[in-house]
Image (cartoon, rainbow, N blue to C red; front, top):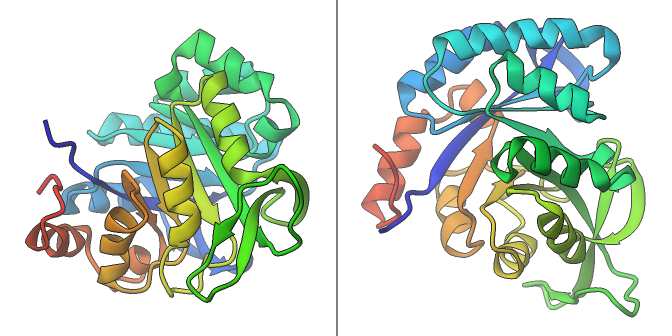
Length: 268
């Protein structure tokens, strides 16, 4: 059976509203998350990701209200991330109607959270959100990645929205997280995020080839061919984008028709 490739829009939420900005600055209101998600549902999205960028305790009730409304009106999987720090919070989000939870900084700081979540709710409910940056200072024990410009680097895991280095090798952390129970990896390269020059194909391919769970490519879409490259060259199972959908540059239907015409299996 040929597995279809997925197209996933991502909605950044603050105080229960979708926001747009650059590097989380200059944020402006972009509408109601459920209404936007319904539009993407009608266009043929395979899933929707809600990312709570306010991510503090006082916003949790607002977020669970949004999830409940979305679950009532959408007929597609919903992944929710941002500030999830405990099994109790995973449970709250799943109970509200989400299908999956996405763990990033908290998973690095407390890897047992992956195992505990997977054991309680199933691997399919635990997505490792992995943010990475290139590091050109080579050292022992890291995976050498050869870039198209001839340089060699390794990819370091970063947390707190890309602002803090961890010293963790991205490929090794992905393998570790999967061994602990992560059922999927949402990979964002900080190098390409928001630049619109395409996904970071080298690290996407390396993570895809070194793990046996689906990998979602994120960060960098600006053209239709970038989706194609993410699947064919990056070997991703899904491609995630935000601004090209929010700003109406492409519809999800357009992306899927483009891919289908080029032999990439998608659900039309």
